[in-house]
Image (cartoon, rainbow, N blue to C red; front, side):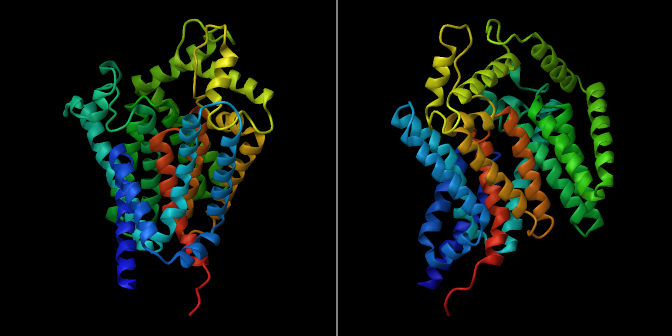
Length: 414
């Protein structure tokens, strides 16, 4: 029986590793592998040991607390049962973390998982460069068939995901490769990782039009320099980021266009007037209207699934467009669950940051890089509502924080 459960657990670990490759590449494969991970988790037994491992992990406890609050948020507010379940399901993706942790209790499995994700992103990077230089027909890719042809191609060489997601993942990959370059012992591998990191950063800044990725890359670059040189590195990091931005602005028409358009659209926005819409003016309308909803329901919000109707009521009789997403995760949580829910999310992120410290390096630095990317990305997007971003965050959190449970879980009875 023990051999059977060990085999199932090993199969679950390999499914978790494969999931790291699938998340940047395929939604269908990600869903399938996640389902297999859950099945293996349930069939692998040792529930008492699983409980010990998870109970010893503060990140898991913070996730369970937040998910419980989200479930309670379904008990009030407007919205149909199906709308509430869809919204709740997105937050419950975080439960992937306690599912993965018992399956990835060996360090070699966690390293393989990060390597699988890196392999998928390097494939994405290679194809993106080939598309940019028009050496590969972009219309063969799935993402190309789902978008207006004017929005992709050599001028915006996205591959498997749309530009916001592509640049978010690629910016993190540039950071991950830079961390790898610092920690590998082989000089040859160090140069390879550093070169690939530079190519990934170039893909973000000079090729793909994801503005969130620009900001995340700058933040992670500053964090990497600060980690390398300590407090003295903070000034160097600020100068390096400013120089990087200046070079990108002067050297990339794509980067320059996106920055100029952002400034022009923000300057032309007038609160509450609607009218001619663009991405920036719409987002600013989303922000101001969401803040008004929070002001009207400050403590517990409008409930899970209640944002759509609350927003529709807010813009009724105006020319502003309807929205089910404020494109800011903090506003979304505060609107749905009030300041109480926002406080629980803040506690989750605080716990995440603190518990990264005991992790073996470079995994602690990687974990904090993940959190920084999510913290900044959530200012401009609702990443917990976006499939790839929320799957990535849950998956890599399970991979990284499995180490805590492996070290802290008390031994079972002899």
